[in-house]
Length: 76
Image 1: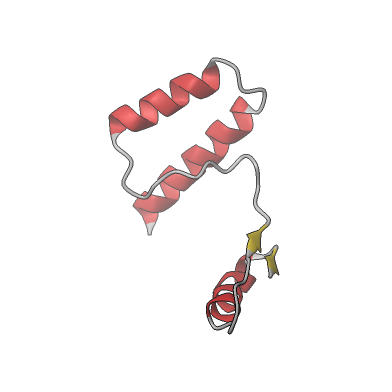
Image 2: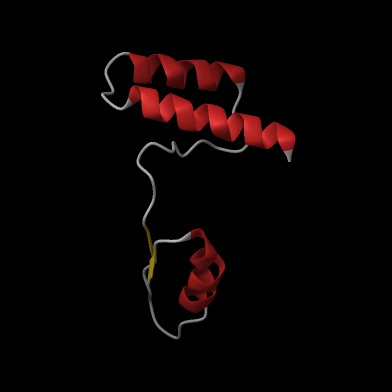
């Protein structure tokens, strides 16, 4: 099962988890959106940022998306 749009997440999980045999679900994601846990500590976030700034060529996009996620988490 391949999911490439947000609206397909729920139906994708339903289909895969309801299968009568082993199944794989593939999510197509934005590489600039970091997979941060929902309750990341300040120390974890600062260590993550430090690691990105030391050598990731996509650092600006990742930081921009991380900031957007952080702001969205406070406005919901």
